[in-house]
Length: 371
Image (cartoon, rainbow, N blue to C red; front, top):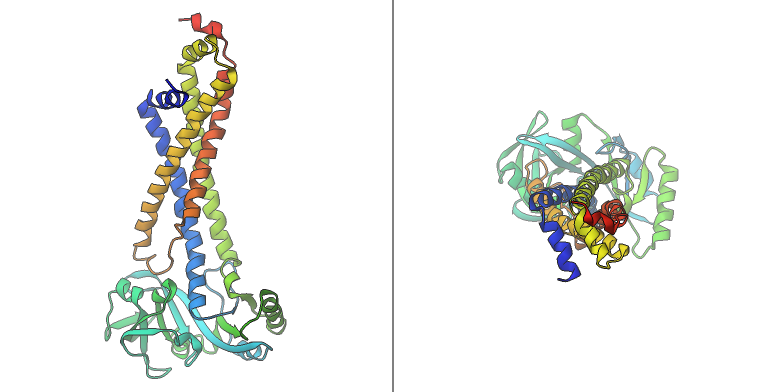
């Protein structure tokens, strides 16, 4: 009988208890996969959307809220006057409920601005002018709202018409209701207000030069903050809070798994006390006994990690298809996240087995003579 066979046999001795322990670990790892994958996917989705629109800098007041606070549209002129800035586009972006969908992105864009240029018409047309009571829907938004060209759509108290379905080239764009900025300002009563300015700079600027442009914008626009497009979401207070909550909730679930594995291994040592003492009596070293217990706990952790990744992926897929979430993000289920999750699970198993392994090594061969 090999050493690895002894380890496996130890776990199979109490299959129900082992199964329940595996389930406890897998729930903790599933929480890591789901929560971290969703939070990272949120950042990735918005980053892809910005790259699709070829945005270099974002000027906004994004802080602890989900959407930036409005500021005066005149800020755009000051931003446009900064050297190295080649184009700007004002937006008013909001998350709001639309008809049966509890959460939808409404993206109002400066009429004639570059944020309209990348939209590819799949059916219908673009609005005729800035004040036509019309919207175009990203293809995912059209599916979520069950709308087609010519259908009415209610935004606040205003009924508009869907005149086109578009492909924006990114999940966030495809999940948006898109309309002109002046129309949105009129509907919401935010005349002369915007909450985001997309900025393009001269091609070929390095990261340091781009950062200097941001500093110049911040010096002339104290009421908002300019950040490189890639840092806009990740550096926001709201996203940092979501990311911290994701990891802290996952950590709590993992701690529960640690306690479960430790309890299982302590029970194993207690039940196999005579067996361990016999192994010591026939010449097994105490370090080998410790390695046996640690091997069992590490194997528990690894199997729980694989199960947790599977449960987490299935959970994320289910959440992603919910009407209120679909089109807002694309979960980041990367191999790196899977590897990290399984590694955490194995580490949890090893740490959980340290105390039981030490207890097993303190036993003496003479105890084997006891009944």
